[in-house]
Length: 65
Image (cartoon, rainbow, N blue to C red; front, side, top):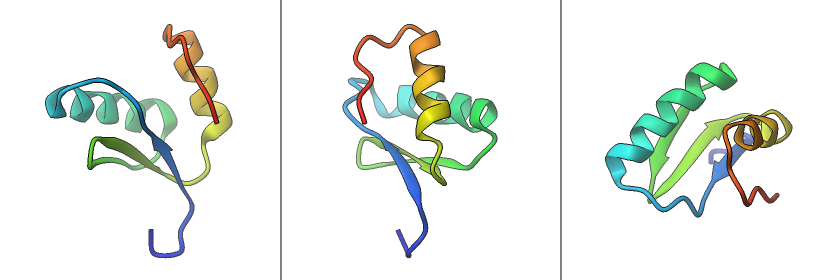
């Protein structure tokens, strides 16, 4: 990713439209850029800990990484 740190959310079973909406929610919640690429949501920066907490509180069952 051009030498910059990113956080990748992979494994979500969703349509492209749902992933776009999910990326929008993450942009607002994490306060960072997010985009959808090849069925994955890519967030700018290392936001793993904040993302893990956010996903768990949102009801995600299997949060790894």
